[in-house]
Length: 119
Image 1 (tube, rainbow, N blue to C red):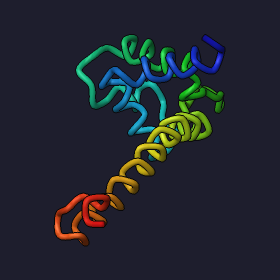
Image 2 (cartoon, rainbow, N blue to C red):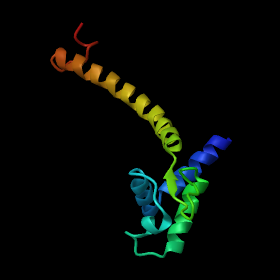
Image 3 (cartoon, rainbow, N blue to C red):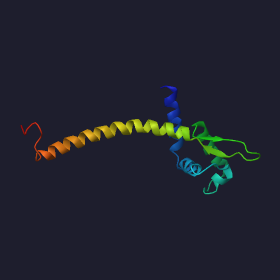
Image 4 (tube, helix red, strand yellow):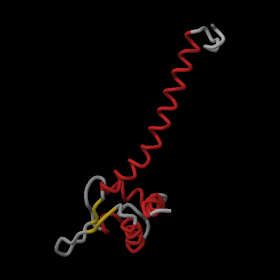
């Protein structure tokens, strides 16, 4: 396993939790403090902080310091890397489906007979 695999594993494990996915969804609208992120949940701010730490370890979010505030920010580059990893497999499947579509069109054009049988 290379380090890229480990980073992917951390990101997907972080996203496996519905609270963390909700935090990511909220951060997609802009930075927020822990207090703001904790509002919709019926869990403690400390629990939300732990979820944020998991997201930080997975490099999905970052924190900055703004006077007394420590807003949490989405890391779009990391999400793009995950999307790119998923897309490489999606594109392979799409190519396979295009090939299957071509075979089905060929079969339909020959009236349902296999193209080799129609010769």
